Length: 377
Figure 1 (spheres, rainbow, N blue to C red):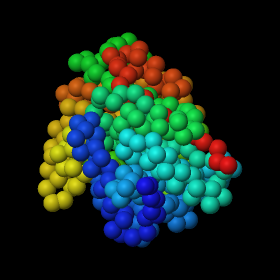
Figure 2 (cartoon, rainbow, N blue to C red):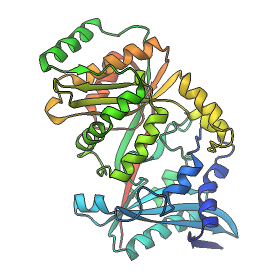
Figure 3 (tube, helix red, strand yellow):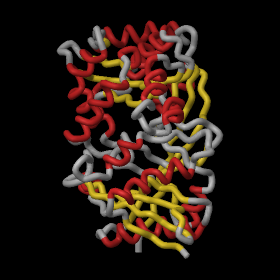
């Protein structure tokens, strides 16, 4: 017997959040999110998303009295307004290897979406583009990154059996950090481009100085650069505030490149984060009381970094600025003896970024993620 229960209490929300790490307890490739963050994002008084910008409903699915699945439905008002659609999002999708459970889990979020007046549903997606997105469809034998979500190989066949079709794919590469700049001529060309465009990289004394001075410009740039990408929405003031706190904790000035014009206006940015996947595994997603210790070790002594964000203002695109950013960051990655750069999610048709990796660096395609879509009756 299968039962679906809407999450309405704090106790149920904790069960919702804790189901995933229990399901993946014996999986060595799974990286848990921060438990307190997952609780906060679905708690109205704490969430940076719920309210005027979005609404959500979580569900628990039981089989014979045992918790066997979970899912969250999201209606992102800003997305629907931007694209003039009536579309809901699937998020936090997990279930045991059982078709009846998978169908009941997806039915729950579909029925909720229809009751809210939506005519289609897609995902897995979060509240915005900076949350975990996409269902893993290839690369199940690779350690996930902290910024992305691992899923079992049986998930995507179950979704397709339930009528979901591919919408877009994201690709993830591992880039081997060289021991020297790969192409000296290209490096000199990057300097020539910087002089020609009258732009330069900011050289801050500290990470705090960089973040405090340029964070608003960086957020504005990311909104512009990501505007045309799949399922993106503008970053609200509440979201920006939360991201700023994360930036101050996670960013190392060696792993960020901020390019400004002659008037000190940000025209491009690239941000990589120390990879904390192994630290989060040791912490089991709980930073307190002592889980932060292995995470901090990863932050201060990284041999792997995750490429989190990159954006260029429209008027500076296709002029070599992206190559300038990667040249600058590569120099410092070499100096810090970082071995691997994880690209995280790149849309499969983002050929400009892929060409830089494949041309100048030793790269390996390690994961493919997919967003699915389904029309609702």
